[in-house]
Length: 323
Length: 171
Image (cartoon, rainbow over all chains, first blue to last red; front, side, top):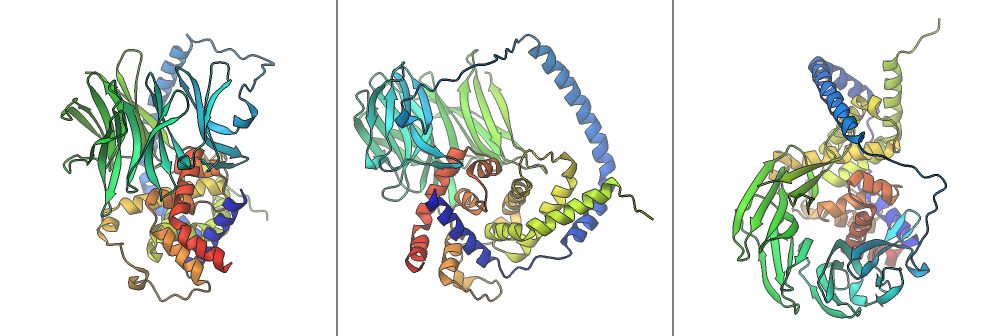
């Protein structure tokens, strides 16, 4: 906590000094008011648009109310929340449900401060009753655990960014006894965003790779022994900068990524060929996206847009892929 | 005679107060992001203009500073996406910088500021924001989880280690 505050102070001092030569404009408020009044001429059409939007929103709200009417939401008075985790793990904030129980680890929290994995922090597997099955502490894990996890019959796979030798993306395979089977450490210019493990134990990782100031989609294949099968900074004719999500689909996989105001989704066959793809042009900045599957078996692409509007709000859009 | 204030007067007063309170910190933020005086000043003006227009919609769900910082970041991001901004070669060394001549009281702090300039954009964003903001507030501004903010800050510290180390050595 102290170190965070100390560093924050240093950074702030440095930035203040760097910008100290720019003096605040004493007439800025008047300038803003003057500019704003010039723009009022456009307000009439904005009002008409707003009315149209209100009508649309009112219809949607009514529709939502009809839908929600079928759901019964109960509030229980005097409900008690029981913390089941052993004391030493209560401060961790990553918890994944897997067949064997719960994998926890990642960050510990203090007030407003959330710290990534330190050298002595552990990853742990808890059983159904929240009893500790194993803990894993290893200096190579210092850094950050990613949100994604994959499991096979005999292992759990987790994505990391390790900090020991400069920041590097990493993938770790942990046996069901809590021992590290292998740890792949990648190149510092690569960001790994998502991964899956197929039925042969091959890990397929996607992300982006930076070279000469440009980002390109990136795919990495690691076999079940931890050996790199293939690594490539993908095809310059892809319309995107980064692959953000992957999910297995039959013998192949579905991939999704984004570029400058473009969402992309495609299907890749087992031999690496892109067999289908679709691009969606958007007029907002994309923060990230995820692929999931709904109850009907259709892929749902959720895209988080950053905050382009005047009131700095952000939102998520969901695209259902039906074929 | 008593002057009765209309809604617009109140709005103007709020704007004036916001400008007085936050102009300096927003200038620092926008300059750190864009590293060009004129662009930073324009970005701050645009920030207050957007805030003024959205003033009635702001219900105080977050601190005013958090709200303004969010808008400023959006303005800076838009500027960075503009064709003109992207065409200009910004991969220059401090010696080559065409900005007005500057003198720094603290050379180490200047090196730290320069190191921050060279961070990848995503990392730069989180480092810039910790102007007395909590991690959840930073997360709200950047649009990611607090865990992700923490991860990026730690990563940024890794990049800045040399410059920060020098400060520690002297400090």
